[in-house]
Length: 126
Image (cartoon, rainbow, N blue to C red; front, side):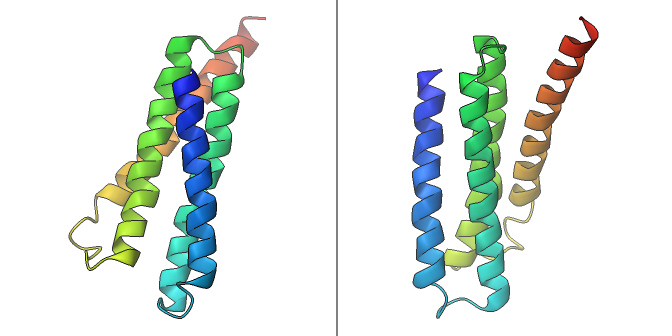
């Protein structure tokens, strides 16, 4: 559990750093469309950092459930946000890694779905 919280805190710190970098250093370098894409990556990263903190401090989840959901969100951040960062900050084209961003999105969806199923089961068992 603490490993997941440490990873979440690292990703949260990184989101703040990248957000500031994007707002200040990249506004002269990237087009408006590219900057919006970069900001989307930062925003989704931060959303899922907050959820990671919730997941790993919620006492209703078992350690196994915390780990499953956490790894879905961690890899979602790496694939979704990470691929957008790579596309916007390097010479790697979106066409060459087009499948990575939606794969990250799918991992986010699966993480949320696992939580939905858990909470529905919990509500029905009462």
